[in-house]
Length: 117
Length: 111
Image 1 (cartoon, helix red, strand yellow):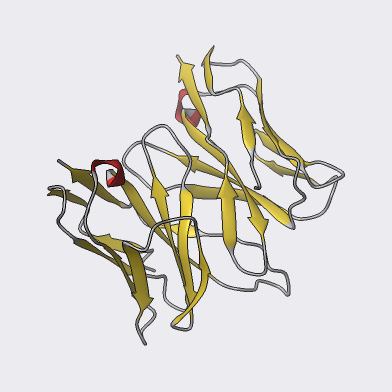
Image 2: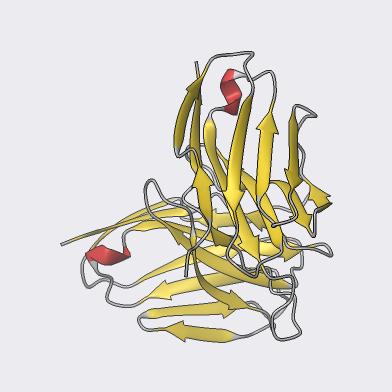
């Protein structure tokens, strides 16, 4: 079975540009979350989508937006890039429930490494 | 603001040694996960603990969830070079699958 796939794996942008990152979840998973991981830190929550609806948003500026498509794939968009947006952007898919328990288990892709110059 | 603190930040040990990594918070979590991340890859789920006081074993790894569901520990017995990586704990909050991650413990096991 295919895991979570993300594209592109690496990209370089300049300040002020915008970027679109893509994610395909594990088959059967309807929830997609986005996390930002800056070098030396743990992942930070950006968005969660379930059944095409935004279910949660982290403490990120409005330059960050996302959406989920009918096939449950997702895009993360970042506008007006800043140097501080350089990070590994992780997509994770999950089942909302497992065995009647909301476990929060996430299955991550390998990430998209964004460098802003 | 929920915060998960991991300690130590860095750990460098010899093959065969035992070690314990800690994850602490002032917040109560409905569940807590441990992930391992290798360079250039996304985190990989190791275990989920849900019940206060729960202990789970995964080969040489033992995970414990605190009685009050605010803290957790990961103990590795007889560490091997293949255990090298970044160990992340993450707590589930809110009504949806939003995880709060700690900053991680970077483990290096030398042959």
